[in-house]
Every structure is written in structure tokens, then in C-alpha cells.
Image (cartoon, rainbow over all chains, first blue to last red; front, side, top):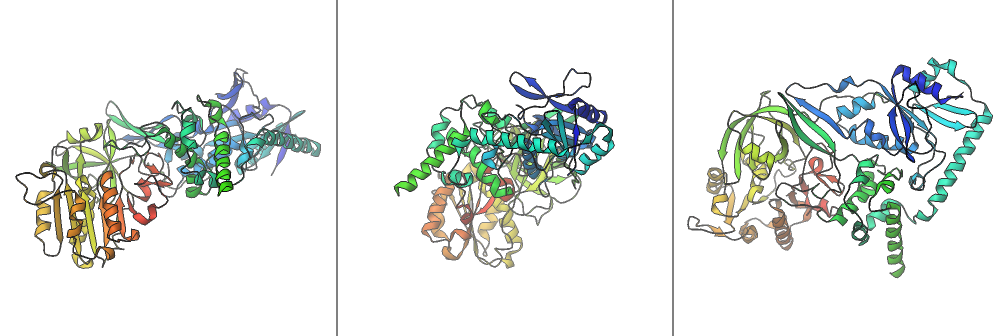
Length: 346
Length: 278
């Protein structure tokens, strides 16, 4: 794929912003969240060293959206093209996961699709992973190989920009006056940076290495008491599922405005006590430990069975956000240890 | 950017329908005959369900209780929450929204030529009736047909005229029981498992379809195990919170299954790896 050099990030984002609205990471405390980019410098062009705090799903599957209006139906086709800058490999993977769900067979979600088709994805390499980042445990990397339109890598004197799609290539061609050739020394520097960040991340996660495939460990731990034990720290704030870039459970609720009725899609959480409760009052997962288990099972087992890929991208957002300080990596290690001990005994 | 999407049909948009008939069945259950305003047939299979919308109030999954062989479709709605309460307040002529039909339904073709035993408990009669009437409308395609029905008390019986006719048919063995007897009731008294021995066919070779409240499954399945019914020949109809109906929202999920897509009717032998099922 085509790779070019640009000395300033601002020039790149300004060029994108001439064509469409751009959302870019902006610093809030010690993390990043997205803001609408403005070329006047109010929202600066900054390359986030690590994934943002908020998940990319917000752009495709907003927290609250209209899913249907009747009797006069609305068309979901009015979305204008938009770009999101600063996505990481984990974010791109999360979008691929959501694509599986919302593009499924005969049940296409037109609202997700209308946004997805207008989204221009500009990813970037991670150069300073957080302690909670753990994509390397789940076959992830600190830089993306696919799934982006453009990918940006920071080097000493500027940035390398790689096109990953036809739209990305077209953008580079249209704006070729902005770019210079990428010298091989710059590419070598980029590769060294990537290797370094990858090693840094592997070191962070060395103590969470599992003896077997994560899906086997979780599935075989079906009857483990560990889920109930870790659930004692859970305060059911549901932040893990809200901030998770792949959690996509939602609630449909009906609303009315004058003579129009609407169905809203609102994020929901399987951690919530009444999530699965049926009208008669029966609740298949009334115990918190069962809901904790369900979340991990869905991430590592059920989704894999249904779609052939894991639902966890190892971004670590749930670890950052957990009010009960639960780190799912610790849970997996405990389950792993428990299985090893059982095997050792038998 | 992402390429081609195919259909842009809104899967969350209900279709307008009109209540053509309404009848109070019991203190909690109301009967509805519904037709789509498009004048098209719903095109459902026995055992499927629809999402019934009341504009501005909400949506609830309701089993279709009529056979695909009749025009329009029927619903029996128990007043169990805000949406179903609102449905109860609607009169004949009222507009409702319908999404669906959803789910997999009964193995209508697979069971042709087989001996079938229906075991229904309470409101479980409603979804089962869609297949019972299909079988009765195509009676020559099925072998022995037996229907066991258990209801809590005399006042809770519904579709009474119809089940009276089933009882009179010579080509159906219909057995009914009430959990609690009363003066008006001259028939069997006891839970539905107590009438399982009244099945005439060899249960171990029959196909058994079970639908009722959660507690009923436990005991009926124990009885069927004793009667040596192979798990492959047992079909259960499960209740879960089917919210979106299209396998996305997660509410009806039990282990790796989305009940709104792969259920609500399941072959019991396929639930071995679904501990959350029963």
C-alpha cells in the first residue's frame, strides 16, 4: 500500500476537514476523548499516544438514537460523510466486530450502516501504551494492518501516512501537493517505533499470559466459584459495558412527539439486574456472579461461536472504568490457575 | 469507508395492523384477532412470535396462537406489564404495530407422519395452539395426535369452545386437568404430569412438544425421561425477553443462543450446552 510523508499533522487534518467533518482526540486530564476538529486551532491536531477514553462505537451506534419513526417513516440515508482521527488497531477491530452484528444476513441495521458507509477511518500507531492496554493478549498490535482508510505513524521529523483503502488512496492522490515521498529511513524508523511499543506492551502484560486459549479457559470455568467471588466487588455501575467498544446490547423504547411515534435505541447493559427478566417476573440471570460470567462468556466464547472472532479487542477500557477495580485479566489468570490446579490434582 | 449494504429496510419499524376482534378470556388473558393493514397475510410458521407495538408506549413479544392456515392471526395477551396492560385497554378497530414474525417455530415438516403429543401448561396453550390447529387442518399428514392441557383453575381456562371440540374429536386424544378442582369441574385434578400416563401412544416413540411456565418444564422433562422419550424427540418452547427480535439487542440471549432467532422452540437435545435454558 501507498505510504507518504507529511511534516505537520495539522495540514493533513485541514485537508480532510475541507471535505468532511473531522473528529479528533483531545486531551481531557490524562486521557483523550473526541472533539470536532476546527482548523482555527480551538481543537488542536494532536496524535494520541494511546487509544482514547471513549469508544469508537459512539460514532456508529450512538448512546441514544431514533430507530424508527411512524406512521411517516424517516430515511436513515441523510448522514453526511465524516472522519474520525486517532483510532487505534483495537478501535478498528471493534468496528469490524460491530460490522458482523449490524450487517448480519437478512437483519441489516440501516442506521448503523448509514453511518458506517460515511465514516472515513484515520487510524494511528500507539507509541505509549497504558498499563491497562492488553491487545497483545488477544492477537492485537500497536499498529493496524487493515481496516483503515489512512493510518498515521509518528516519526521524529513528522508523520508517515499510509493508505489502506481505495478512498484512502484517492485522498492521497487528490492532495498529493501536501505529501512527500516516504524515505526508507523513515519507514525503518516507523518499524523500530512499532517494535518498541509492541515490546513495551508485551512486557506490561507478561504476567497475564494464559496457558491455554482464552475461550477454552472461560468455557471450562462454567461452574467456577471465581465469578461469584469477583462479583462481590461489582457495584453494577455498568461502566464496563458502556465504555466497551464492542458491547452492543441495547434497549428499544417507544416515545411520542405530537402525531409522530418513535422507537429509540438506547445502550443497555447485561450487567443490569433486570436485563433478561421476562414479563412474568422470571429472571434467568438474577445473580450478579452469573451476569459477570455472562459478560466474559459473551466476549470470549459465545461471540466466537457465533461469528468466528473474539469480542474482546484488549483495549482495557473496562479496567480503567471499573468502580470495583475489577481487572478481567486478573479474572482470566485466576480461572487459568484454577484449571491448572484441578488438572494437577486429578 | 465501507462498501455496499444491500437492503435498507428498517428492521425496527412496525407495520400497521388493526384489531378485528377482542374477547376477554380470563381475568388476565385477552384474545385478539388481528389483520395487517396492508391486507397481506403475516406469513408466519407455527410457533413464531411477533413484536406488538403500542405507539408511544412500548413493544412486547407475543406468541402467535393461530395456525398459518387461517386468515389474519390471533394473539392471547396476558396482562403482565405496562405494554400488555395498554394492549388490554385497546378496543376492536384500534391500530397496533406489528414486527415479525420472528423465530424458528415448530418443525412442522419433520413431524409429518409422526405420533405427536402436545403438553401445554397455562398460557403455554397459546403458542402450542398454532401448531395444534395446523396439525388438525392437515390431520391426514400426521399419525396419532394427543393433547395434554393443564390449567391452574377453572376460571383460567381459555379457548374453551375450541378445546371442547378437540375433546369430542375421535382422531385426537385430548386430556385436560386442573391444578385445583372446583364444583363446576368434573374432570381430572392435579398438575399436568399426573395426566402423562393417560397418553395412549408409546411415548418412547412419540414426539413431544412442551410449552408452559418454567417450573413445569422441570417436572415434565423428568416424567418424559422416565418414559424414555429420546431428547431428540422433545421440543420445548422457551420464554425469554425478546426485545428487538432480530438477534442484536442481547435481552433474550441464553448462553450462545439468541432465542428470538434460534428459538423460541428448541429441540431438547440441542440444549445440552445451554445451561441457562431450563
